[in-house]
Length: 232
Image (cartoon, rainbow, N blue to C red; front, side):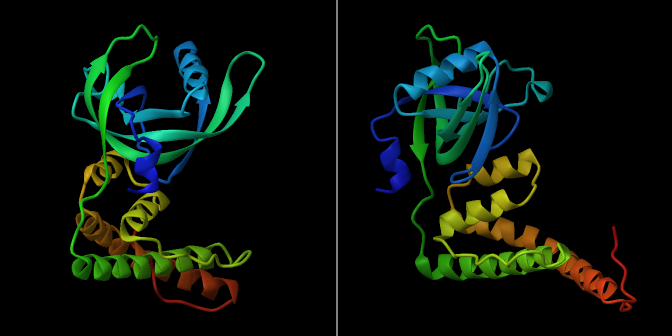
């Protein structure tokens, strides 16, 4: 059993915080809590397991009043809380594990409560999974190096550790400013290989442009010349 699965062991119900954003496993997310119902949610989960469900939901783009049954969300674990005198708070959360929203339940809380089931990626052939993860890691390193060069090489280039393929796929997804629809699509996949293959296309499209931009930036910094142009 994974560490993420252990954190939700025995849980079948979660308080929900619908937001127009997507949280991924292991992704850090700061939140500002100001609505009274979510102030109550925070108080309630602080007394128990410090977990709640963050479901992607944008009321501006939907006629629904709440996330649909069957939709996918991510459990958020509260890591830090900064309370303010007026009851508002700033919290730091971390994504834990994904869940599928099964149904809503009414226990009298001002916030949504739902019955959920948790899931992680399916087991896959290591012979197919490792090469896909290695490709993504190499592409991600190239993107990170180009971004470092574009920053003017300030500081020290961070050492990037290659995590297990599922964690790597979410790390790479979180590192890019992807639109919510694409990020949600990657969140819902239960195949690490499928997610890595989807990411490969995104990285291959980005890395060439970033490396070319970094090359031009270096030339400019050294008063060099480059006849290359970046197509925008």
